[in-house]
Length: 222
Image 1 (cartoon, rainbow, N blue to C red):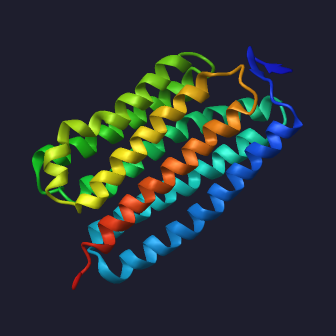
Image 2: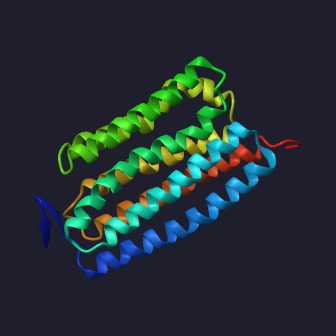
């Protein structure tokens, strides 16, 4: 067991290897997926949609890269600082994932307000994790879930602007993320961290499919 500033890391060698494999697979897929999405958006989408694709792609890759670095880093002051970025990146990923869908309704005051609100809450969450590291962790989990499911408030207007397949995938991904939280807080379970990140990578893949479907089924001639 290793501890720094009151935070414990209790993973053995095999748990770290399993977690590293999950992260590695997720990061490689994210790099490929983001590249394909941005290339597709460059050819077929408006400037606004292209910007949304960049925001989502960079947010996805950056979040997984930070998580990989943090979880693989040995216990030290550096790992303590990486923890802030890792927890902050979750807020970034949530906001970045919402962006391609809400951007479709940027001309709707409700959806535009939702887009602004999501990024304001993400900013507040990042400030919380950076200014108060190691504190309010359970509050942060509630904020993650609240932000993630806040989309139900605008489900109707969003559903009218994106393919039904994307809408279904958004919900499925949200359910997978939410179920994964069970393992995130189940700290006594062996391989708990690898399982949690497995849920994260799976949910991220489902949400990527939702984003790509949104772009591909909205392309000219489709």
